[in-house]
Image (cartoon, rainbow, N blue to C red; front, side):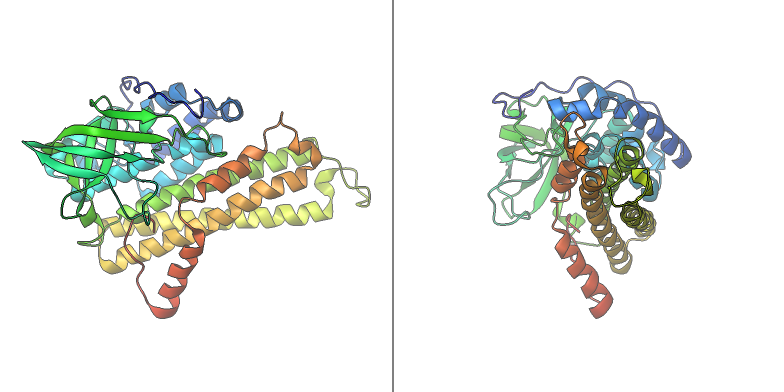
Length: 409
C-alpha cells in the first residue's frame, strides 16, 4: 500500500483465537520462536514498505499480546521486566512489528488502573482472545503533545467523538481503537471504539523514513458514537494519584530501541567477519582482527550490555511500583525507565551508525539495506526527546525532585 494512500485502509481481519501463555518462561520461549519467523523477510518488508498484516496475525495468535493481562482475569501477568525483554526480542527481528503493540500494552495498563471491574473483564478477555488494541492518541498541530482537540460529547446513553489523530501506530491492524478525547471540562478520557464503528477511518499515510511498516498514519473520527461502557478515565491515571501507566509505556519504547541496537550489532558482527576487508595499514589478514575495529566493537558491546542491564533494572522497578504504587515507587520506576530510555537511545543510534563505519563501503549498497537500522533508530527515538530524560534524572538525584507524571516519562 502506498505511503501516501488517500483511502482508508481495510479493516483488520478478525483475530484468530490466540494461544494462552501461562508464565514468564513460556512467554520468552514463544517470543524467540515468533521472532525467528518475523525475521524472515523483515528487510524486504522495510524496503517495499509492505504492511505486515499476516505477520501481526502470527504475533498476536501466539498469545504474546495477552501476557500483561492480570492473572485474576486469566492472563499470565508476566513481570514488566519480561514484557520488556519480549518486546526487545521481537524488535530485534523486526522493530516495526515490535513497536506496533506498544499502545496495546499501554492501554491494558490504563484499564488496569482506571477501568471498572466490568470494563476490565470485557477488554482483558478480548486481548486474551487475540484481539488487538491500536491507538488514536497523538495529534498534530497542537501547542504541545499534551494538548488535545478531539472532543467527547454526551449523546443519550453514550458519547459522540469528533477529531483527527496522527501517529496512530497499530490502528491499521487493530480490532479496537482506544481514542483519547477531552470532555467539556477538559478532562481526558479513553474511548475504546470498535474499528468498524461508522465514521471511524484509518488512513495509511505514514511516510516516515524509518519504522516504515508501523502504519502510524491518520485516524479520523467523524461524529462516531460509543457506549458509556466503552469510556475510561485517562487524566486521572496521571493527575489524581501515582500510577505506572507512564513508565510502562516508556519501558516498552526502550525495549524497541534495545532490539534495534541488538540487530545493528549482530549485522555489524556478521558483515565484518564475512565481507569486510582489513585496512591496508592494519597489518592483519582479516577485518575482524583490525585493532581499531576491535576497539570500536568492544565499546559497542559494552554500551549494549549496559543498556540491557538498565532495561531489566527498569522493568524490576516498574514491577515494584505496580505492586505498591506510591509517589516514591512510581518516581523511582519513572527515573529508572528514563535512564533505560537514554541508554537505549544512545546505543541504538551508535550501533546503527558504527555498523556502516565498521562494515565499510560495501555496507552502503542498497541490496543489503543496512541503513534501515539507523532509519529505524532515528525515527523511533524521536518519540520523546532524550535530552529531557537527563534533566529528570539529574533533578531527581541532585535535588530530590520527583519527575512529572505523564505518558512521556
